Length: 296
Image (cartoon, rainbow, N blue to C red):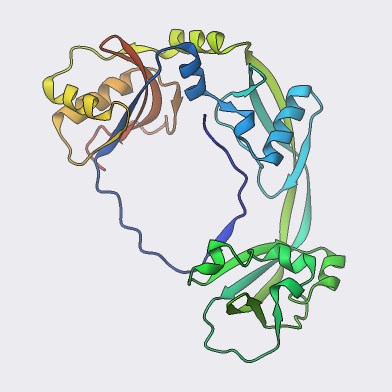
């Protein structure tokens, strides 16, 4: 199953030099010998979701039109969700919005300036603890300067000791002192998202049958170099380090087939999707990505 989690967004201010991936692409081939295995790859199980997304999905399935307020949808499923053996397409729409004041709190982990009043994290008002990472988190343990975004309404601003006329410049996080600087408030828009659901299959067998009818293709008549790439990908993800005629031909074979899920179907030179493939008599759930034109 594909796990989808609602995560706290933390802005990392340190610029990290990320080297580009030099691989020509990748291919994974995981056996999917029966309907259950195919449906598992093709869906999300509601039991794998965090509490809030699970609430929204179950409410949508029940027809209650559940809502959530956030700056982005709490869950955006890209495939059916399984709930008690039935598979549903879950959709969302923004039905309302409102402007709220947002603050950015920058946390300097090893401040050169330690002058100013300090307060222990545990002594902060609840509204300020909510806005900062937990003292035991990796975000605090790491050395990089980070920033968090937090919304404070008028009553929360009055209760805060960090925003709207901060009374403390330093916060004690167990064994380290961190300087907190605040920018804001600036306007932020929160949206009310409504979730709805419609059934797409009553069982894993029905879902798998539909996917096989729409997307299953046979990977046959491979050259020896093509077969070597496929064999290396079975049960794992194989990263193709160098462009080759064999790799390009494999990409073109997949590109000519109908994907179950395509990541970027509008790029004519890029193949990136999930496929149902029959190879040497076994059905596989395949994921492939790469440029057919040779530009990685």
